[in-house]
Length: 148
Image (cartoon, rainbow, N blue to C red; front, side):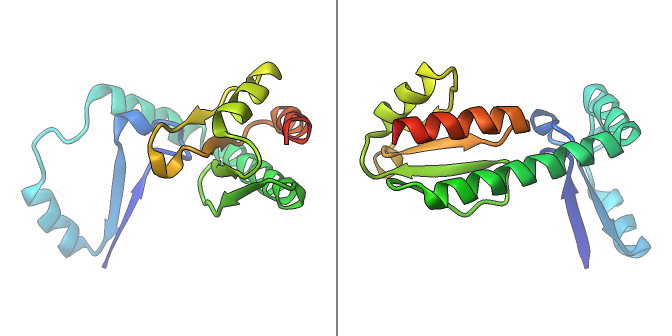
């Protein structure tokens, strides 16, 4: 068995594509034999070292984002006209039933909140809304309640 993990989300270095593998010494030895000669660049290495040095703060931030996402889920559950797809990430894909995504996007923007729109037909009534700090979440909740 091999456990593969990424630094992408919790350490905030998604663009560097850095991860690690945990497994038996024999298996890892075989993986090392077939890996690319330079499988991590200097920027990735520096970012990983910094993330490990500050892991407690990063993990605290990750826990806070999860709490804020759950708070947002609870509020959306009580709002008429908005639903979301379950998520383990730091965002919710929200579907608006009584407004177009464009109207919701504009309404949130008028409150200083900018979210991700999707032009694809299957998602054209949805917005990706990321969790943030407690203050940002409160501002988002206020805005959502005012636009739905």
